[in-house]
Length: 173
Image (cartoon, rainbow, N blue to C red):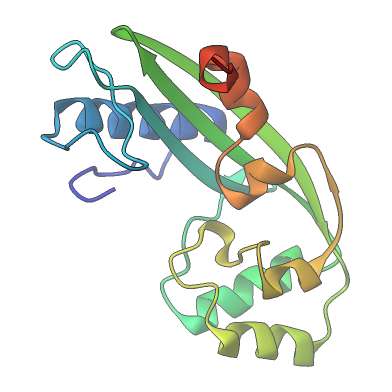
């Protein structure tokens, strides 16, 4: 989110939680009209519901972050090839001025990637702006052998955790 300086160093679970909190608080303070998918409810604006999420890829206890270049994206693929990593999301929902915070973790196992697969993926450009340098929604799904946990978490919004933190969002009537 523009204007929010994301933390990049520290324990991964704490990082995603703190980054999501910073985003939620920035949204709560922002002058955003309540329309469309912009949901917000903060102490200063009780008609708004705030939902903020921060997702990171963690390999060997290290947050990989967003690769700065194609060569760094390739390095990430090299490191994750044939191995498991964790996709970790911090989610904050502010309801009636109350901050509800949770963390979701999903294990993703990449298949053993050939050099040609890595090159194709890097050239495709989907890695840009993505934590860990991939997105499972499109071509990135071809990198994955299996996944244990929430698919929506890997996409970037852990819907099950959202339903747990704010069940009223999923009630009819």
